[in-house]
Length: 219
Ligand code: DX5
Ligand code: ZN
Image 1 (cartoon, rainbow, N blue to C red):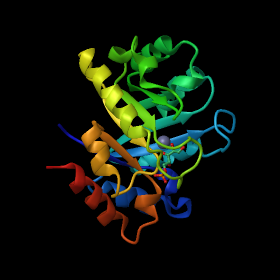
Image 2 (image 1 turned 120 degrees about the vertical axis):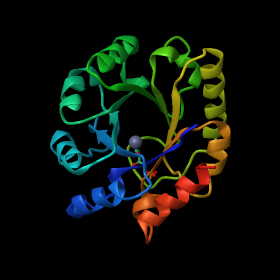
Image 3 (image 1 turned 45 degrees about the vertical axis):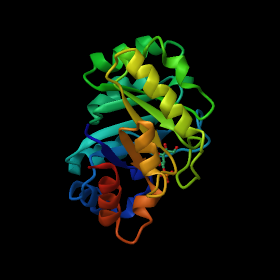
Image 4 (image 1 turned 135 degrees about the horizontal axis):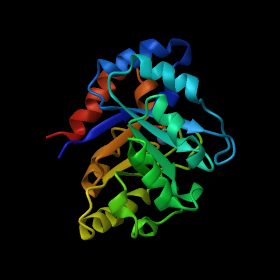
């Protein structure tokens, strides 16, 4: 099965955004991971619609938008307009998750649900067939450059079992602290898509780093 590498643009150089977008375009990366933070759901503010539109203008790959915002239903159409292909909301931010997922799909996007480190995979049992991608947070959301939480492997395995049992086609994505040191173990646990921010953009040669990650999960 295809495995996806998703560089997180949160770690890009915003003064040289077009350069970094083109680096991703010309690399072996599969998706652009776009982190939206509202300063309420998480203790940080990142960027919003104008920056996403600017990325979309140059990006030639899937736009994987991760919303760390309260009440995301208010902006579903807006994120479609600025170019999101996958729109991921947090389980912890949605009172009517099933309705939110239907709204994302009705707007013409793939629907994702993200789980904070304290949220068990089992909460998704009754909606798993409606979810295209589950994004497991392997750090507490809000900042790049944090260290990977080891409990993630177990959660991926539990989610994988739930997906198989339910005969769902949901992809598993992991976000936070992903490096060449843990990516193979994540692959083994059942991960399909790997977000990497600092490990890619803070490396000497981001294109080569993406290639290294891609090689570690392709065979
Ligand atoms: C954290 C974001 C991540 C972050 C990952 O809240 O959701 O996507 O950019 O960055 P690294 O790979 O540096 O942990
Ligand atoms: Zn993210």
